[in-house]
Length: 147
Length: 147
DNA sequence: CAGTATCCCAGATGATACTG
DNA sequence: CAGTATCATCTGGGATACTG
Image (cartoon, rainbow over all chains, first blue to last red; front, side, top):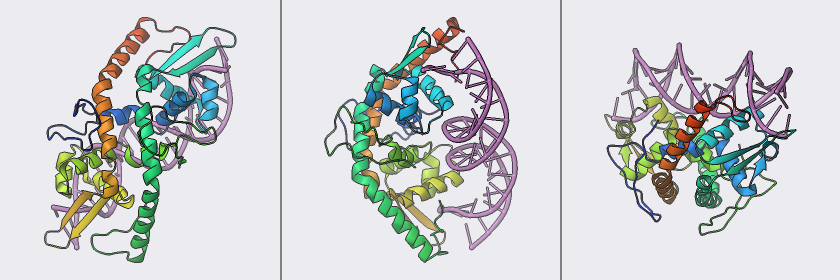
């Protein structure tokens, strides 16, 4: 639903370039990896290695089997996860992150670092915003803070 | 809605560690930065610098004013974007990425690189999956491919 | 065990129209 | 210009129950 557009060849640049003609180049990845459950699933698979359905279910707190199945199928289709079915009794199915999926690891580490360094600042910003919003409420150009 | 958990101090590690006690540590950031419109907005702000509401509206194709306002407010509250209101006639409002927001740039560049290098492989994986699914349809352990 | 089948809901988004 | 107000819609996800 969005466009792909290469911006750089290799190495991590501080500034990413933009193209007036095309939409946000990272929208496709967001779509692929970042959603409520997709991220935790990939994370768990990468962290704990090959696992069975039930193990994932237990580790990813509060996920339901329906959703777990849906996301797992999507990830399999996208080539990020490999599913192995063993026709035994009872059936045994194992999920494993693929080579392609593993290439996301540095990205996840990057995200983790950013979180550690900046999530606190986000919390502070929110408090400040909310305080300001409640103090002076109906000021011009500054609508009350919801959410 | 999810937990924060520091995994590393600095430098980009290939493998991120996991903690059996806690949920996916990057879930909070996902929530903060990666959604359908939040990402394109941050991207555009970072790429084109300070802009007025209308400029953002024009650059982010197909976004509606309502949604643009909502996301912008959220980003402002989270401290990722700075809003400046000029009481003129007609009114002039400018949006700019904050220092905190700018710290996401390397991450975006990282994402862009990953996209360029791997989105093609995802497309290939999908084709293979769909082909396999349609060829042999009701095989055990391999449900038909939807989506 | 590893799912599938249903029903249901909330929040995000889309479409339109209207102001200070 | 920079939104706000409404209403319709849609999809991911939640709750629950049931099989090969």
